[in-house]
Image 1 (cartoon, rainbow, N blue to C red):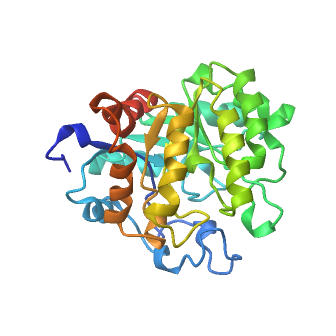
Image 2: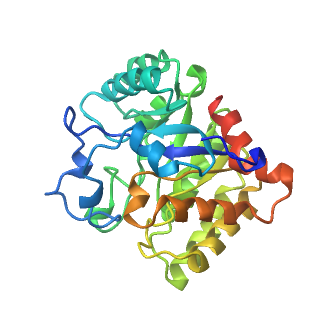
Image 3: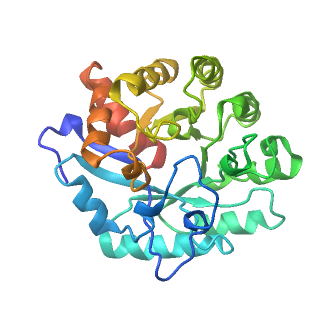
Amino acid sequence: MKPADESWAIVDTHQHFQSLFDAAYPWLDPDRPEPLEGDLTPIRRDYMPADYRRDMQGLGVVKTVHVQNGRNPHDPLDETRWLSALAERERMPDAIVAYADLAAPDVERLLEAHASFPRVRGIRQILNWHEEPRLRSAPSPDLMESRQWRRGFARLAPLGLSFDLQLYWPQMDMALALARAFPDTAVVLEHFGMVADRSTEGVSAWRSAISRLAQAPNVSVKLCGFGLGARAWTPDDTLPLLHYTLEAFGPTRTMVGTNMPVDLLFASSVKVIAMIHAIARDLSDDERVAVLCSNAERFYRI
């Protein structure tokens, strides 16, 4: 997957594998209320390295980061074990972001177990809260403010683990306070803050919130998940949001991702990579390499 022009090499910081024949993925349950992504039928299938390589053939992706995908959530170590064995065979993913409930009483033991796997670099616990029950993932809107949850969060940095932050814009001020309370913990905002409401008012509120969150120097951002909140997205309506995010965080704290296979619900892999190229087209050579590749290599140590 090496690109012809290495200055356009891409580290995909957000992708998923899944094997449905031997594991449960509750978020793909057909009886679940329709989520933000819409009808999940097209991705209720195995998605493995061979499928990813086929989708990314010739598109310049050189390394990948697998973000937890809800495999057997009753046993968070199962996905880490499975991915680690997969990586040994397939030489991908290069890094793993695992799952942990940071409010769990025994979370320290779980985090230590995750950290014992050589490819594990961070943790994601989805914090999205929305007034509509079908669009929420967290048990409360302010989970990250609870003492018990923060006790688990405090264990990340000592174990060399970062945190992948997924939420909606109304929660960003809480996230800013969290980042400031733990300045030694590296945090990366998923999906440029999930602009679920693309109305004029919704985008304006998102812009203000993301500008405030970007003030924390230990928070970076991923430009990915282009169809989350806008299933029929186009470059004209989405690129301005991505450029605004890039300007807020700057080229030293911005990374890119594909969100495969989820974003195949909204676009082809070619369209997704074309959008990533569009993000970086007007950057200097050094800035482009940073956004597409080297920031991710540094953040995830790959």
